[in-house]
Length: 195
Image 1 (cartoon, helix red, strand yellow):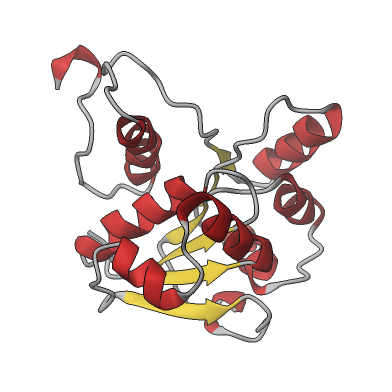
Image 2: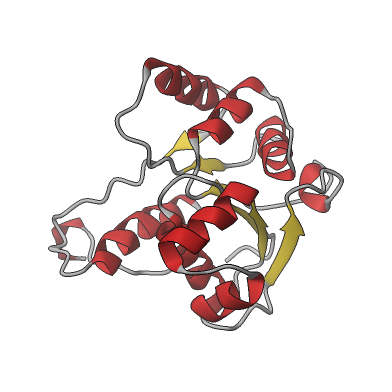
């Protein structure tokens, strides 16, 4: 696994359990992680997971954060805002449509948006995990612009061929796809064909 940090951003789209589970897997496997959470991301963490602060989030993700660094989303001068800070890429999970729009149009109003802008300009991997449904034409156009700029859109749309028995199985399906895109060799779910 890469020793370069993965930037993980959690924004205000419904789907906070995806971000929590991804952080848990990264932390428990000691993957260097730079964590950024927007104000609306915190709201969704509270509403969907009962998590209101870093201490509760750390506990919910296994309690071991030796490889995790937390950044304030309002600090646009922090390391993730600079192309000279080398990273293994960035995942925004879940990714709100407001964040997609900001990335697609390069507005960079927050650290999350600036970090995504940097990832694109440096030609690193940017994975956007939207959960919105249905998608308006504005959403589709912004997702297209982000894709044309180099982002990878990975909707939080779990499959069912692995015969999920509980919600966690559905969450793990999506998290597995994210890990695969990051080339992090952790197996959470049975793959197609029985692997």
